[in-house]
Length: 154
Image (cartoon, rainbow, N blue to C red):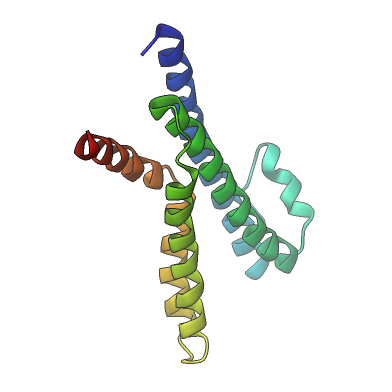
């Protein structure tokens, strides 16, 4: 691997880590605001995220669903860039299957829980799988899987 490739790879890895911290900051701030609105209390959020104080409870609640999809897309895209830098191939199909499985499991879990009257329980499970989609974990699984596959085919 060339020196330039290493520098770019390091920057990409630092970028996905920063994306994870940004996502955490945004969602914790939204949850704090939702809690404050639901309990009719003053919010303790500070920083640039205070813009969300102007949103109603349900606007914020539905905005959080949008952000879940957005951050999942960001992590998918960033992971593709890292895979391309490492293996000179995006492996978009393989990573796409992983993301479709995660999102599919989350949706199926909610669809099963809804008619059974277990929406709160199914939400916890669905949220877990969507949390994985909004993290570098799929990338961390793909790297050794691609490496092992290339070694077994050699």
